[in-house]
Image (cartoon, rainbow, N blue to C red; front, side):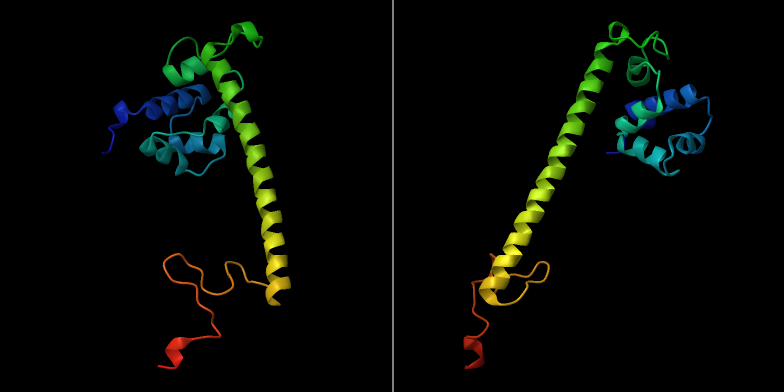
Length: 156
């Protein structure tokens, strides 16, 4: 079901971003944010936004104003006491995202090492290097494992 832009929270966030940057078009906003022109309408239509990018580009913006339309546009100061609960929560979440991204990279490296070890074992066992995605014999779950050198259908 398509949401009317007047009911779309991201529509209002984008409007407030345009006000913050003092631009009157999504094209100009996209240019400032260094994203493709199609990105802003995509955010609105999907009712999602790249919060990490927005926070990085908006140094002194009051996140309560940006997200909820409450309070002043700009933060009063930069010390921790002036930060709202929402701003603290967003910063905490961004730190967690960074931690998770690092863990994902670590897991990708471990997977690559395991893949390389599997390749080495296949080469040692079967005498060939398996191509990407290849496995010895047919071991797909929907078909029985079959030895390619013992094809019974050829004798029928």
